[in-house]
Image (cartoon, rainbow, N blue to C red; front, side, top):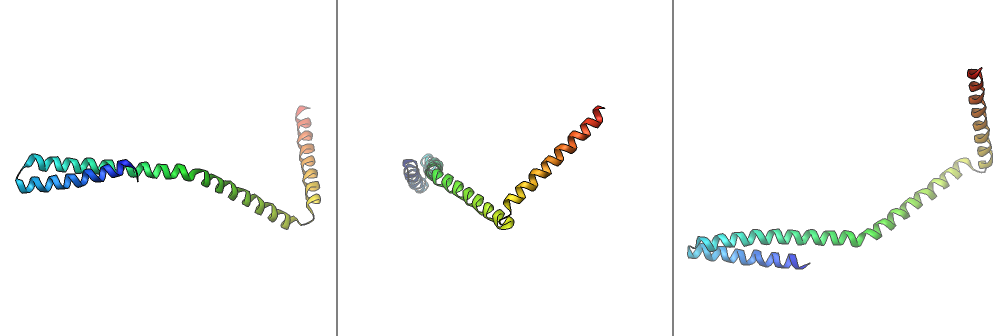
Length: 118
């Protein structure tokens, strides 16, 4: 709890007392001042709550960032494990097949280009 919340709450209490005394004493000016102090106190207390929340978020940001990075790393590990389970010991064969497919696509594109140039 910061000083704005404490001061805001105090102003609300004083304003409530002023309003009550003004109503009993039939003093409209004191009653109005009490209502104004309550409103100012409410705003100041709200501002203090926002300050506290922002401070909490700033304090928690490094931890949240670390957790996000750790979660990302965990997903990468799980994904790599899933690929390994799916391909098994055939990863070299799959890479060879991908290379052959890439070479075939390159050869096809080159042969089509040569036909359009002629």
